[in-house]
Image (cartoon, rainbow, N blue to C red; front, side):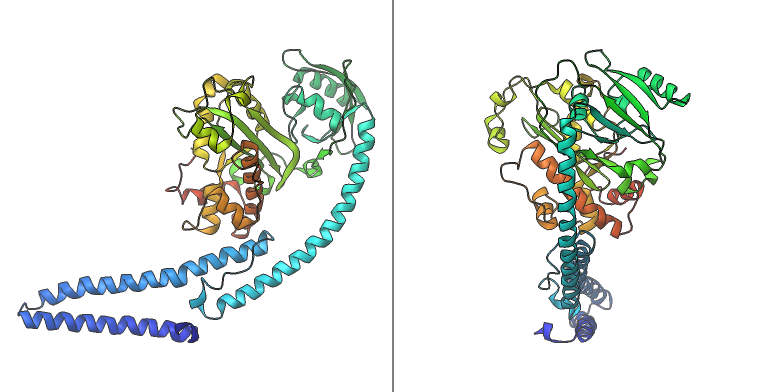
Length: 464
């Protein structure tokens, strides 16, 4: 019945009820005091307690029927406006807000329709670009020369399939890495010295730290101040590599000089979303048996860059754990131990912000084995639980499944509770949360950490 009344009249009646309730409480307290001849003290005590309870009850009603619906509606509108997702506004939860919820839902639906039309146009254009990229990939796959492009800062902005195989022989290939992350810096600096002396190209010898992998090629200066690396195929080249997507991000060509992390825009950061599967749920007693990681750069997931490895825990996997993640002792037999597996993840996540769902557990497991890895896990850390609280409020559900459902992220059933599947889902959630955070005016890493600390009661802060 109340939902049929105008919103302003309902609010007016609400406060009329509060006033009448206060009068009734005062009158009742005075009557009780007079009946018991208790003077003014007893009525005052009765009035204080009952009136406080009345006001608290009114506040609870407002919180449940006004404040929470408005917060939820704001989150749903941001989701439609900034992330291109959502299903409009839930008018049922906001039924006591009068015409506000239907009006917001109509606006949200218009935004969704407009974005859908834009998505169709972008998808058509993207399909054409992908077709052209596939042709270029096929051509480059036929050429037995590995190609890497470096920006003026010496960071990798493009590599082809042959280069991915060469880099991967040392460590997982990744954009924004320096060539010296893979090979001895002295030879690279020597070739750069030749170019600085006026040469257009220079011979280049690439060797990893222990000399296990050695490659030869050329370093060529580009007009933008960057360089192209052409690497000859190794003598023991196997069958021709199957075509794979070129991995590139040309935005890195124009990247600004290094800034303090706190002042860095969220879009300019590199993130590594990761997850672990374990023998149990105790950081102190249990061990990692699988690691999965995915890189996010420029606000998008970098296809082709990932870590997916089993880890030998050196102990039997409890059947109760196997029932959840389906990993058996046979799966981890012969897998690397936590030392080399952790070093692989560390190299993959160099200069990146680590992102995990319920990060204290996963980071705790890595830090527990830091000595065995020889790695100092001092990376900045973001937790998607806290990011969800910043965007959707503390009272919302913050499980990975709830976040994926809210943001339209699908986790294939066979990938759920696998490290790489949950890492991929975490990365997709992050990509969808970034524009929502920016829509709230949170645009730098420092501002985001400050906001997450307001929700510190949910999880431990991992950033010192």
